[in-house]
Length: 122
Image 1 (tube, rainbow, N blue to C red):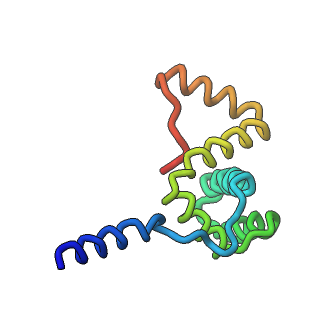
Image 2 (cartoon, one colour):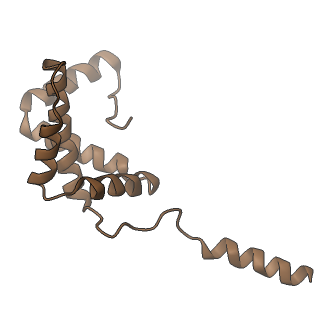
């Protein structure tokens, strides 16, 4: 009986290899990085227009990348649990630096002041 219980415990441990199932409409990592980069630019608008509702900008970004909000949320959860989000945010940061050359100089200046760069991951 003890052997049988031990076998069932081992089977249950090895049968669960993932904490989360892959979403049906998983967004590609490159597209996810592009969406996050655009969302970061949109977030900067909230500092300029603090009392405005900027949800339309978020909807426009998702629509322009042909991504549904539910798919984005599920993909974000999946990549976070799989610990791939740091690489995606690094790619998003590179995209931002390509779009705005002044951002690259700003980041270099901040690195010289602080000694290290603050990651985009919260």
